[in-house]
Amino acid sequence: MTEINPDDGSKRAKNIAAVLYLIVLVFLVGGSYLNQPTSEGVEKSSSAGR
Image (tube, rainbow, N blue to C red; front, side, top):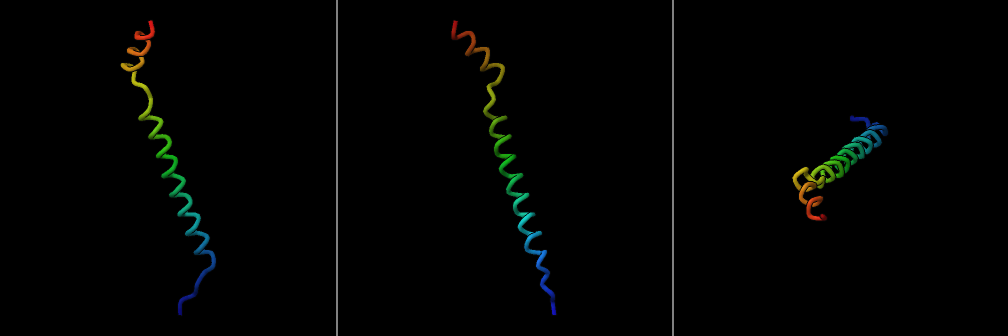
């Protein structure tokens, strides 16, 4: 018969938590990177204020 190791559940939960953490991190970093104003946009906004 197969033995059920109680550590398997906690190991799986830790792996799932690590993957979710990475997904959230990539989402935040990627979103902030995509939202950065480009140098072209910065030049236009700075000259428009004059």
